Image 1 (cartoon, rainbow, N blue to C red):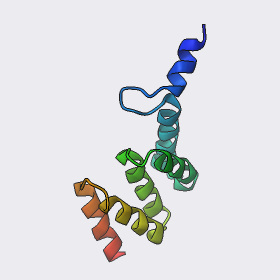
Image 2: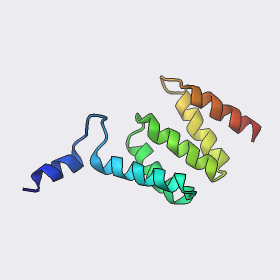
Image 3: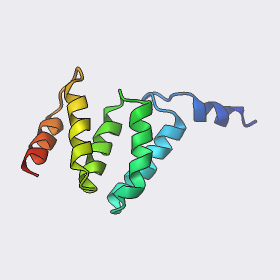
Image 4: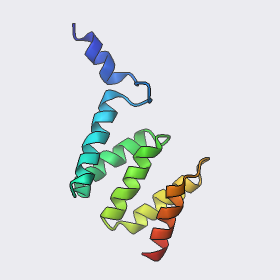
Length: 101
């Protein structure tokens, strides 16, 4: 009877993320939006490392680094994103923020 739930927890959903990844991301986002970026950091680093193609993970991690004033880490992550195949408007915004910091 629990096979359905076990399958849901380990198989990717339509968006590509497993149930565990979605829960982890939601928890990290709760930490971020309630002013606890230090608690979110390890969750987001794990997600971004496991699925670098998931831009929302790397964007959230970038925001986390900035919230923690980890400017060097934020800069390295942003440069990694700019070496990728896609460009997003928010990447240029963060580049400007880092240049003025």
